[in-house]
Amino acid sequence: MSVTGSKARRDRIVHLATTTGLASVEELSQLFGVTASTIRRDLAKLTTDGRLARTYGGAMALAAHPEASLRQRVGEAFEAKQAIARWAAAQVRPGETLLLDAGSTVGALAHELRTAEDLTVATTGLTALQALSDVETVHVECLGGTLRPLSQGFVGPLTEAALERMTFDRVFLGTDGISPELGICEADLRQTRLKELMARRADQVYVLAHAAKLGRRPFHAWTALCEGWTLVTDDTADPAVLAELRARGVATVTTTPERAPVDPHGDST
Figure 1 (cartoon, helix red, strand yellow):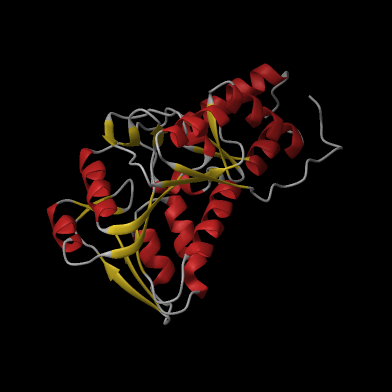
Figure 2 (spheres, one colour):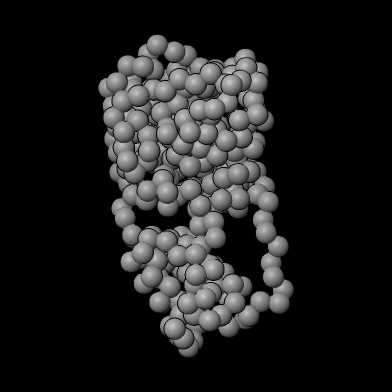
């Protein structure tokens, strides 16, 4: 298939991402007969214009589903999530008891903890369970309950009851969006209720969120950000938002992702 003109090609990319859910750089390059560098520039332009969300190796439509599935979110801001996860893992000490939320960034942290020694990890997320299920040096507790298929996390009264049996040195929370005024945004009120309870059971609270989530208000369920919590994000975060968070007593940490070098010989179509 040949599509002439960058505007027509970008319109077609948005259509494909919307109808199929995901679009990879390799597939799009072959489909349109242009270089991968050209496709990457197209995706960057479409992301800047607010028409697509970048993922690791491709893009997904913003409106493909009101709440993106965990599968769709795993590749989004991949390098940023890895940097955040590495920083978070470096804070953990042997012998600690941790609480891990559901979500792709917290799931990346669970993977980083595979080399940890003498930890107890309780989690509400299937991703963390899968990452740590075969690690002999990590004792894993599953806080069961009602499984939300989109988030691959447990919520509800059974999860909340299990939380009452434990306390934690650190809790690591995920989020769909962050507002300095409103707090942590989620798709489901059960999720925000659970995050509040999780935070109450831990000595130190961390919110792991890449920069694109700052200032986002995709849903109408909220958990307040409390003084003394720490937001861990990446170095593209809006300085004004970070400053407002700090003014409200929330500590902020910015990490630097390992970004791939730009191809200087790419097609400039």
